[in-house]
Image (cartoon, rainbow, N blue to C red; front, side, top):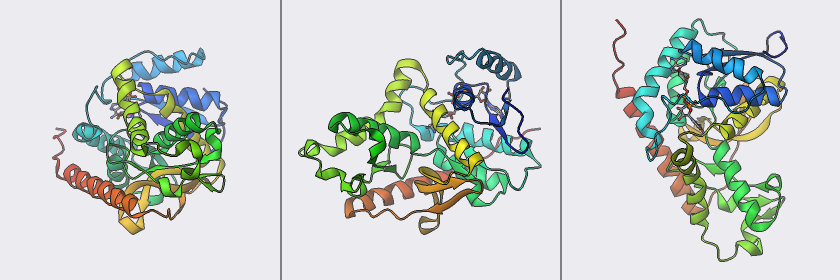
Length: 297
Ligand SMILES: NC(=O)c1ccc[n+]([C@@H]2O[C@H](COP(=O)([O-])OP(=O)(O)OC[C@H]3O[C@@H](n4cnc5c(N)ncnc54)[C@H](O)[C@@H]3O)[C@@H](O)[C@H]2O)c1
């Protein structure tokens, strides 16, 4: 679909679905120079998306199957999506040792761990979109409250891409100024901002069944950083040694995958929230590991 560039191939697995199609569309709109491969267990859906996107439409047809349902926590998706991830990794064998895998399927924190185990790739080559999208939503929300461009606001949602996510308020900055010193934020209930950001995915799902344009653009941006080795910092799900877990945390991403993971100074309350998120993710990983795979024969 895009110009053929040696060694620059992006395979969008599940590309017949909404998120996959939105990602392919965003990659094309951003002009990411790579060969794009749309892979799907439903080849007709993949073909349909490819034809539609080739017409430069940004409204792919609906085919909901495994995404979240209205009101459903992401953790409910665990069993089904674990088995899909394992199938995909099996089908991708032999996996090139330099492959990078960006996981988007939910619950993304746990599935990134599963894909790492299943792919047998080094930890830094497997990462997930995590709270990148949530952090963008947070910055937009704050921007509208204080009349500062979102790109000038450095604020992260961290921990879990789910109900245990938290905002690192004490580390948030407008350029070098602590965000919370902004006069327009005085007296504001910060937790209501966190909750609004967290509930946005549920609100979109309630209204139109699934979310895909935002995550499609995030995925395309991350893929672009890998291909162009930009080393930009995003809050992605990656392996954080200090916590011995795949969690959403700021890191650089480039052609090796995740290179550097950063320390974020947290206050006591934020550290507690981080502890809760890490424990929840570890519990879900244990739960996922205990789910029996259905027999394939
Ligand atoms: N991380 C985020 O911020 C975020 C945001 C939105 C959606 N999601 C997640 O993304 C995932 C996809 O959502 P969607 O709305 O695109 O769903 P969808 O049902 O529209 O698409 C899923 C696609 O995957 C395909 N598929 C299933 N098993 C496969 C396999 N073994 N190999 C290849 N393809 C396979 C299906 O045929 C389908 O076309 C869900 O898990 C959803 O929860 C994550």
